[in-house]
Each structure stands twice: as C-alpha cells, then as structure tokens.
Length: 475
Image 1 (cartoon, rainbow, N blue to C red):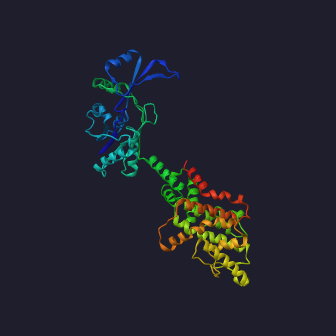
Image 2: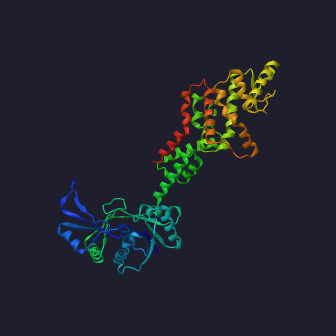
Image 3: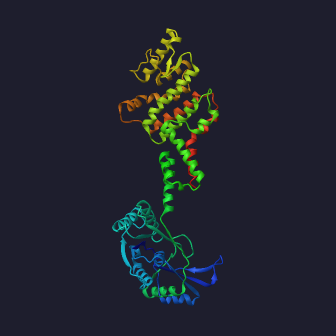
C-alpha cells in the first residue's frame, strides 16, 4: 500500500494568479497579481479580473501535485489550526483527482501549536510513523508543503529513523526549487473552487517533474557537518570513521585519499606518539644531526591539542615528562661537565666533580626546592627531576628563560602527582593549563634558541592549518 504523509500549507491544494495580458512590468515581463492569503475570491471577482484582460493561471499546490502523480492508497494530511480552512477544498480536490480511479483513504491530523518548532514537528511526524506498520508498504513524505521546520522534520526523520521512506519535492510552477509555488493563495468559496478545478482540468497543462528521493542529499549534508565538527574539535579518529564509512562526503577521489592519510597521520601522534610525517621529513628541523627537535616539537603540539580538547589529566602528566626531557637535554648539551645521560634519564656527574662543588650544587637546589615545598629536599641524590632540572639551570646560568618557562610545571607538579599516583580528583583550572602550555612553548624556543625560529614557527599552527585543508576538500 502506498501512503502519502503531507503537511498542508497556504499554497495547497491549488493556487491562482492573474496575468495582465496587455501591460508588461519594468523588466518586460507580464504583470502578475496574486490574491492575498485569506482573501475571499468569488466567481464575480474572477469574472471582473477577466473582463479587465487579466488571464487566469491555476497551478497545483505541492500536495495535490504529488497525489496526481502517485495516486496513493492512503493520504495522511496534517493541518495546523490556521490551515484547517483548507480542509474542505483539499478533500474536494483529492476527490476530483481520483473520481473513480481507485479507492483511497484520507486520515486527518491536527497540530495545535509548534509548526515553527523543529523538535515539535519531528516528534509529531515520528508518532504518526510509529503508529503505522512500516514493515509493509511504500511511504512518501512531502517535503515541500508546510513551514521550513515541518519540511526539515520530514527530511530528518527519513534519515535519522532509517524508515526507508521516500521524500517528494515539487518545484514551483516557474521551475524554482522552493515551497513558494502558490504563495498568496486565498481562501476560495466552494463555487469558486469548483470552477477553478474544472477550468484547470480542461485548460492547464503542468509540465513540472516530481522529485522523489531518499534523503541522500540531507544525509550527506549532515555527515559533512558532523565530519567538519569533529575535525574542528580535533576528534580525528571519529572524523576518519565517518569518512571511511561515507567516502562520498568528499566528491573528489584524490581528495578522499589525501584526507584519509592526513587523518591517519594525526591519529598516530595521539595513539603512538609518532612524529608527524611533515615534521619528520623536514631536514631543516634536524638538530645536531638527530631527530631530537622534531620529536620535541611534535610532542609539544600534541600537548597543545590535548589541552584544547580539555584532556586535563593527559596534559598534566605529559607536561612534566616533556619539560624534563627538554631541560635535561639542554643541560646535557650545554653543561656536560655537570650532567650525564643514562638509559634511565639524566644524572649529576658526581665522579667528575669535587665534593665542594657537589655540596654547593646540592645545597642550592635543596634550598630552592624548599621555597616552594618546605618538606622537599634534594640532598645529595644524583637523579635529576623537574625541580632539580630547573634549579640546576638557575645555579649555572641564573634565572633565565628556561627557568621561567618551566615555573608552572613545578607549581602544578604536586597536583599532577596526586592525579597520576593517587587517583585524586583533578583540581586544575583551565587558565592554569593554558598558562602551563604557553610556558612549554616558550621552553621549546628557549632550549633550542640556536635554531632559526622561522624554520619551525609555522608548525605551531599545524593542526589549525590542516583542519582548514581537510574542510576545503568537502566543497
């Protein structure tokens, strides 16, 4: 059984306009006149227009046009309070269409309020469909009549609920893709309406084509919007899943592959800490013939994005490890007399120092640690952690950019430890994390100050630039 579900708008069931057969408008086209909605149009008034050389043009509203083309067995008609005035004429028009061709059923539904609210209309149509036996039959939803919210509800429910319904769209009489096909349609008294139906049947030929679809265009638009939203939120794995299942959201095949590879590249950073391909391939970023700086820059970018995504725990835990790695390598490069690198990290090279120098260094670090943590003590341990890293730099070079840029790391270290080791509730505000990440950026610049900053500054915006590139492929 074929069922049509349609809202009724002011353009249904038919519309009329009068064309001035003598006088053209400023653009050289015939002047047209449409009665206002709610205006009563009598046979006498129609006759007067025709006497004044106005030609009568009649066109079907969207619902009636669909009915003529599809001849559904059942028609579920939805009226708002305002459109109830159309019911009598609509049913008369439908009866004239069938006129013994086949048996049909009209079922009327009434919306008391909310025709301009998408959620209300979505729920209303959903309830109608839930009452139907959707396992059998062919259901057509008219997405031309009604308010824009009514039409959107029809589109959305076709896609979201996966009812496998069909969507019917009707162009205007002027072949415009719009629901304004009979804008200004008045209310007709019964005799006038009957006259129009008879005249249209004999005089009017409608060459419009009925568009039937399954909502693929809307589905594609929704998927593109969701895909774009995931990318802008740096949710690359979710975006890739959408693209793999729905590759047609990007029309160009080459752009599809480029997008997949770009997303996989960025995902590998967060899953495996793999260096971005662009960074790894950029020889200008080689530092002392190693990939150390590429790794550092890659890791900083990862922390920056994790912070933007609001992943507080990851930022806290990774920030400390990052700072220790960067400052440790800085000390090892600049002050090998005092620091040595081992498989477990960095240590004070006690064997190369006399006892007085060791005591001087350890006492300085211990006193600095106690300023921020009264119970803290470095003692004569040779293992270096973030506190001792910073203060060893301060001891050797004074309070410089390295020390200043890592201050927030040490301030948040106690809270970081509670999160990492004590399953504690996170008590770090967003502005503190922002300050922390800004400090890490300054640390990168300061620790590798002998690299021309112009060679890597562009990478600080890498993810935002890549996001825009990915979005462009959707067009």
